[in-house]
Length: 377
Ligand SMILES: C=C1C[C@]23C[C@@]1(O)CC[C@H]2[C@]1(C)CCC[C@@](C)(C(=O)O)[C@H]1[C@@H]3C(=O)O
Ligand SMILES: O=C(O)CCC(=O)C(=O)O
Ligand SMILES: [Fe+2]
Image (cartoon, rainbow, N blue to C red; front, side, top):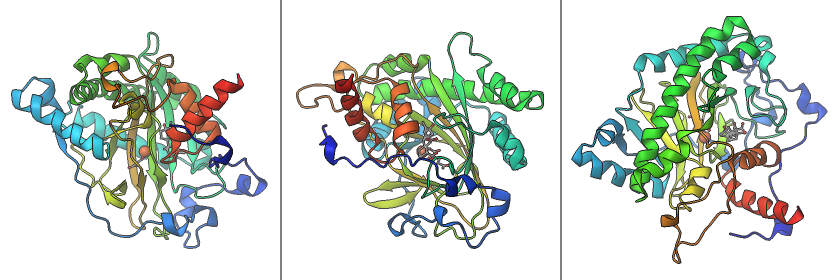
């Protein structure tokens, strides 16, 4: 896919200005503001539009598929194939993740976001970095600010990284938080194991060997993100997370019991209601490239409300840094030529952190930026 570069107007990440530096998203203050700062008011065409219909997402019995149940062996890959060709979202039940682990993950998330802003700012995300505490990215963007606070931290399965998460919390937050770090290390281990099972299913549903994507992601260098969406007194003007496609490979999301996740499908926003016995799975841009465009990384967003804060746990599966993102030969032929160039995940991550605010066209602009960069070298 080529773009005429000179006509390309990329929604670049705004550089910081004095006005923005003064804007701090202190949820303990802003949640009581009926006159929300204009930077949080989204353009009319992107404002939430009240009650939306449910998205029809299949419920996948992962345990039955992985155990070789003959009916599930046929049914689950078919359901996943249909959903991923349409909108890239499906629900996973019988996932094998301990329910206590999940409820503790929510409890520790509550604890973190209840800390005073000054404590959270001790691990403030640095410009260009994707880990740390961010309060609505006031230092990154100057408009359409998301009504949320986030904590993102790195996870890796590589040799010697078995304590990466607890080390991260210990180094950035100190001894008092090392128990939370040890806990999220265990949670991320469970997410990585779950990703393996889902990759086996995706390999089967794409008609590639069960092991292809499972082996590709066996080693992964992923990102864990805690999302906190405070209440907003003008929920019809703001957005918790703006419309975007995840640049990563696969997102494993666990919602609390407050609705807010919406997917853009057939020109309409549709909701995925909370259900704490399932994980919401969605295809990201990197897996869309791995599937040579067969599976869709779709636009989604999170709306806020004026009654109950909402939180979600998002595990973003990312391949090992040196892995080349290239679809398997079975998915490329004369009728299905290559859509995206070879790339590595760190290059796409750099693009989203330094040059481009992830939206629905990230991969398209990234491909052009990559070709431009290659010709300039
Ligand atoms: C690689 C990433 C960038 C974002 C986090 C993530 O790990 C995956 C999702 C991306 C994001 C959520 C897409 C919408 C815009 C964004 C700025 C946000 O609202 O948080 C994105 C994240 C980011 O920190 O850049
Ligand atoms: O919180 C949610 O429901 C969605 C969050 C999301 O899309 C993201 O963090 O990429
Ligand atoms: Fe997302």
